[in-house]
Amino acid sequence: MTTKSRFTTAIATGAVLLNALAPVALASSANDITFAGNGVNSSSNVTVNRASDTVVNQTNNANITNNVSSNASTGGNSSSFNTGGATRIVTGNATTNVSINNAANLNKADLSNCNCNGGAYNVTVDGNGVGSANDVNLNKGNQTFLNQDNNANIKNDVDAKAKTGNNDASYNTGGDSIIVTGNATTNVGVQNKANANFATIGGGNGGAGGSSVRVTGNGAFSDNNVNLDNASAIVLDQSNNARIRMISMQKLTQAKTVKLSTPAVKTQLRPAMQTQT
Image (cartoon, rainbow, N blue to C red; front, side):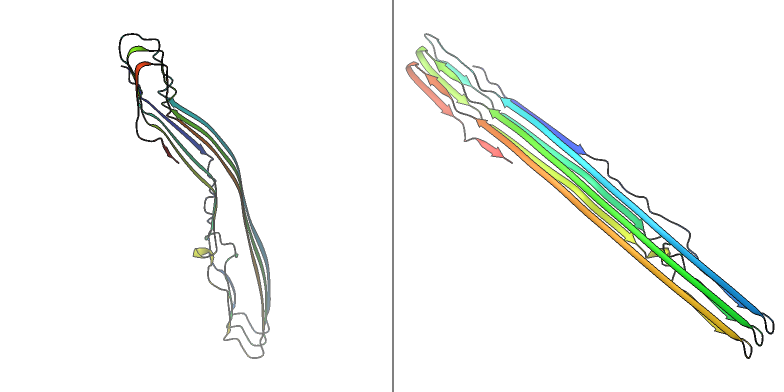
């Protein structure tokens, strides 16, 4: 009597390097413009033009293909043309385990401390003399563009086979012919993770508070003008495209064949075939 057991495990993992952008951190401080203590009939003029652009582009492309073939067999046995004794075939269990894990495409951008708005301005016109003229022209323009794209194409092709059958006891004479088959089981597990975007813009120290204008304590007939123009634009664009295909073929063989045995033939089949996905 011969007993065989076969246990096959196949593991396929496809991983694409995750792309993460390190946080952008620039010093953030207020900008001070001060006119103070100027004499009688003095004239002061300050013009500030400030423009800042922050552009971040993140793109991931992933193509993952898994081709897995897993076979386990304890069947295909033959005991034939025997005379004067019992014939017995006993097969062990045949099990295949397939596990596939794919992870691809992660974008992470942190602009919370980038000082993207250029910081705050504090304008002070204070304590200037009689008839003084003070002019402040402040123009700020800030634009932040963040673009994140992910494209994933994943294909999983699994062919899992387990066989304990196709056994043959034929043309035996003078004894019993017995075939006992083990269980045929396939287990297939597939996990795909693709395309995630995380973005943080503003907040933290990058906000730096609002700008302020203070005009106070100036002399009679003084002329004070402050023009503050603050324009800000934030554009966030995120897109994800994923194509995932799963092809799974599972084949179990637990049947048996007994032919032309005399005087008696006995066959046994263990519990029903098992398939798990």
